[in-house]
Image (cartoon, rainbow, N blue to C red; front, top):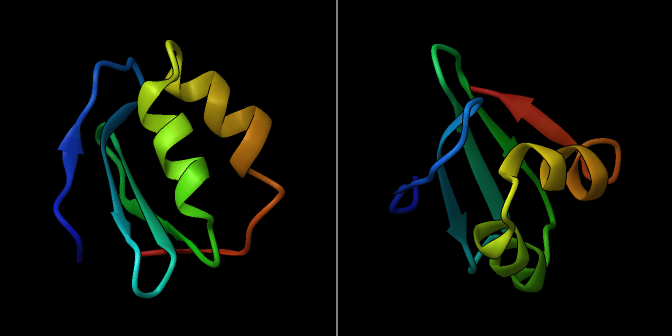
Length: 70
């Protein structure tokens, strides 16, 4: 698992990215971690910079990438 970066969000606790495998890790508050596969590093950077992490996730990641709950 990559280094997780804690973020200011009402639903997301931390975000991490593994560039070698292009895996995006999203740990939700009081929930599990989801791993999204084949995510471009650009998307991770935009996600980290987004004012609303939840809105960015819903608009740009959910439904666009295969994921797995961990």
